Length: 305
Ligand SMILES: [Zn+2]
Image (cartoon, rainbow, N blue to C red; front, side, top):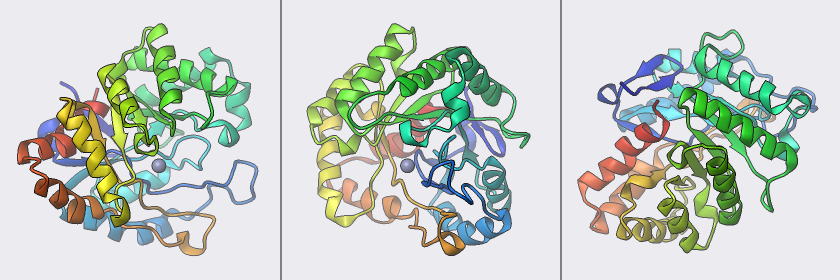
């Protein structure tokens, strides 16, 4: 039976309700060579972040997919501590982020060696934490895939084929997402194991439809700013009207504890989607069954294996 691989172990669909497919608990957007990169006291992160996660749990959120991959201060020990304190399962990533964040050890490894690292994290554990990776988070530069990003993508496809895990990519351009999907398909990968993260940044809605038609997930994950609600509604409407309700993921890209700031800075709450945006969608005649597809079934199907 398919399950979501989380910090607290595997979870079946029957054990889960709403799932947020893209929210951050801990990220360091400085790069690997900066002093203090990725450093924080797990107890302090728990203290700062637990109230935000509990607010989401009170809304019915039962799991969060966490995108803090290699290159942005990944700390799976911290994700585990936060999960244990709150009882909220997090889906931790393997993979590596985009060009300027890629650390030397990823740059130096062959495609095969990277595939082996991703597979080991997806099937065994990440860095001695006892936590298995639940998915593969990668990235692409805005103007096109670089040589190293393509190596990471190819390693990700091989790891996805070996494990059934889903690849999600930070990709703000539809043309670049199309190139990634071409590479995935030519390497024998499955479009339904690919999530186009940040698809909402691409203003050409025809590209959302084109990529959905090819079978990948279109993730609209910047929800939360009231000034953008109507843009998100228009994008969702297009996809629903074209019959792609089962290809859309909704999230907020919010949080997080930032180790570059004193006491982690000021996180943004994870509650806007259910507090404010879902009621707006309901007013647009999006029925309960569709809302349940968007917020429960899709994120499970996208990330479970
Ligand atoms: Zn993000």
